[in-house]
Image (cartoon, rainbow, N blue to C red; front, side, top):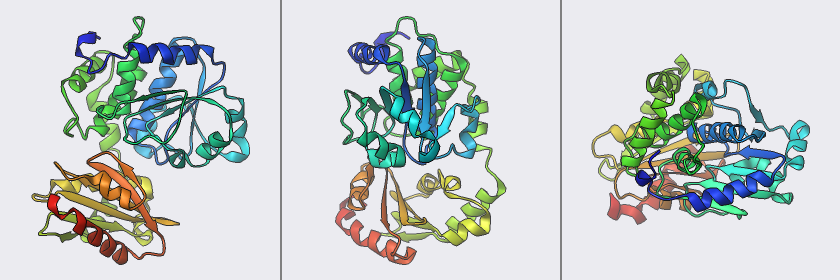
Length: 340
């Protein structure tokens, strides 16, 4: 790719990256819990790239691959971490590449193991306020996805030629993390990279069908329950919805089937902030999505979380009922009323 279109010249970062990779004999690639397309796509793309330069690696994730992203792992290369059977994979590694996440907490059991081990680490991410301290951190909060960040990094290699698998993985992560190329940080470079990925075999129609059009009937029923729970606040500029454990049971769905629903609430005219409350086993999971200048990540911080400016998450203790959680959220939002 013509380097003049890159928002950042990553030649120095690539050199440092290659130095650590070339020294390693056993490489682990990992990403966050409840992996999305940017997490799955970036891990698959990294493995493909390492393979192209003669390096073997293992992808180890703390949670299973969502139903609509299994097409990215056609070789079933991803290991879903079991501490009883897979601990040796982490103990034998001399380099760990952490993608699309910047805190060990969101790596769950994998993160717990890595914190107690002395491993060289590379962190590549686009989220704000990184907590993980690594030998090499490549963090660009202006980049709309980790997949795009990876692609610009790999493009510093003059020998880099994307395989169809790598192109598909990267395109998938870019497509979803930009909200279908519509979120605010999407710029000309994003489209230029997407065009190049299509040239190398990424099929936008197939990728869209796999990610968007492969939901079981239960998800549609779940969406119906979500819309039935809808409540509007602050002169209809805030939309709050909920999913209970009973909702999951009645629709034969799980947490993975809730992905993407909260963003659709921003289609409602006048809504600047959408909040989804999900009753989980030991917490209430909160997802925040916003438009324009509303700082969703600042609201999420109040609830022990964080994320992007317009897309973030947090939690409340499971002792809260969903109605109590909604009341708590609206109380907190009084401090953000100037954005509404």
